[in-house]
Length: 156
Image (cartoon, rainbow, N blue to C red; front, side, top):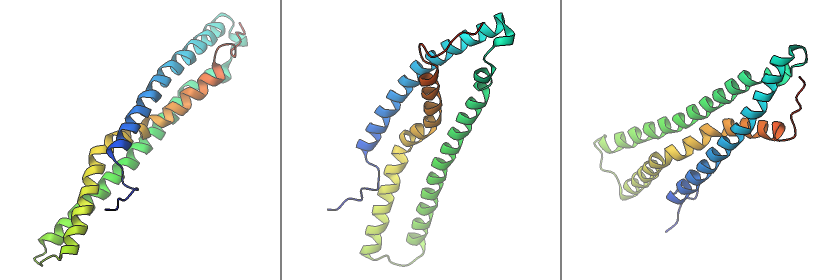
C-alpha cells in the first residue's frame, strides 16, 4: 500500500497542535517583555515629552494592524482550501449521481480522494490556527528581541 505523503496525517496535526501551543506560550512571554519595555518608554515620554522615543511608540498600532491583517490573509487562504475541497466533493458526487455505472477504478479514485478530503477537514483547525498566529508570533518575538532586557534606555 502506498501513501500520499503530501496529505496531512493525524501525527501532523499533533505536531501542529504542539507547535502552536509552544508558540502561544512564547507569544505570552514576549508580549510581557514588549509591554513592560513600552510602558517604560511611555512613562519616560510623559515625564519629558521632548525626549520621548516616538519612533518606537509610533510602531505600536501599525504593527498590530499589519500582523492582524496578515493573520486574516492566512485564514482566508485556509478557507479557500476548504472551499476547493467542498467543490471537489460536489464534483465527485455528481460523477456518482450522473446515472452511469462507475468502474472499480473510478470508485477507488473517488473513495481515496474523499478520504483525503475528510482527513483534511478534520485536521484543518490545526493548520489554520498555526497559520493565523504566525504573523503575530513573528511580530511580538521580533519586538521582544529588539526591546528585551537591557536594550531599552529611558530618555526622560
